[in-house]
Amino acid sequence: MHHLFRLVLAQKDLSRAGDLFSLEDAEIEGSLSEALEQIRIISSAADYQTNDNDQAVVEICITRITAAIRETASIEKHGKALVALWESCLEHNLKPSGKDEDAPHAKIASDIMSCVLQNYNRPPVMALAVPVAVKFLQRGNKELCRNMSSYLSLAAIAKAELLAEHTETIVRSVLQGAEGVFAIFIWTPERPQPQ
Image (cartoon, rainbow, N blue to C red; front, side, top):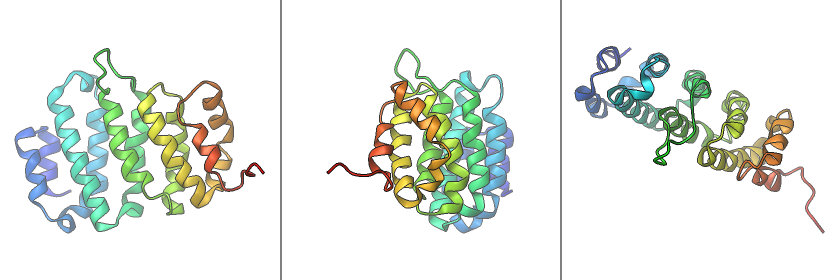
């Protein structure tokens, strides 16, 4: 792992986290999967939801990592680590607090969702992402569900068969009132259009 990532993540050093943006994307690209694994460990700690410093370090690191993945077009290389961190968010509370603030793990999930699912036209990435994405539909976060549904609609257009095996979960989400999920059915190419 790049020494600056190692320093920031090992010491959870918020004062140095911003320095990650001074590095070239190519300089850190080889470290991204390992950094994502370290972030998963930090965000799984018992005190993460109440530790503002750790949350800030994680948010900055994820922003830097997702930017580097986009700029180096390395989503297929780092997709497994990215999706593993994303899936780990399902083990935590995703519902907004009483102050309408996103839960810490919902913020992580949202940032990763946009990075991963913008690659809806890359079947290897979607094969990793779709099974995890549909699990978020029933987790009680309306904003995440709405955004997830939009991305899954695009995935359905690009490669509908990836969603076929998850139809039961999607239908269950519609029946339970998950907002936006109906859009998946509207845009699925195989669905016959009304005459």
